[in-house]
Image (tube, rainbow, N blue to C red; front, side, top):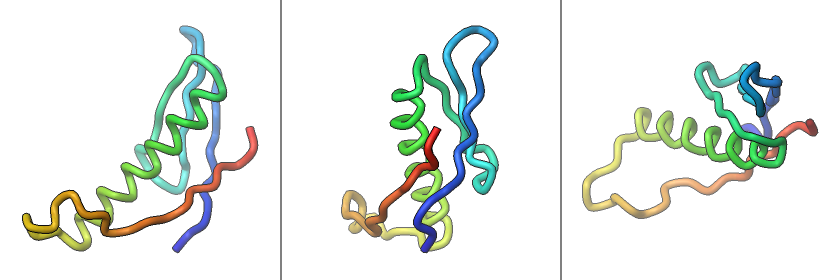
Length: 78
């Protein structure tokens, strides 16, 4: 399993920032400040990977709520 992803952060025209993960198409987020971007992109990556895992290995209804995977996400320094 991958241990980290590249995160590109941009200044938003309307203020604040937005970020994307090039290795995960469509994995984007926004925030008012850089610390918010770090938290939000980590959440976005986690959610993205959870959806991929569910698509690859659908869970039975009786397994709902049980963790199927634990992993660490490392973000590149901004």
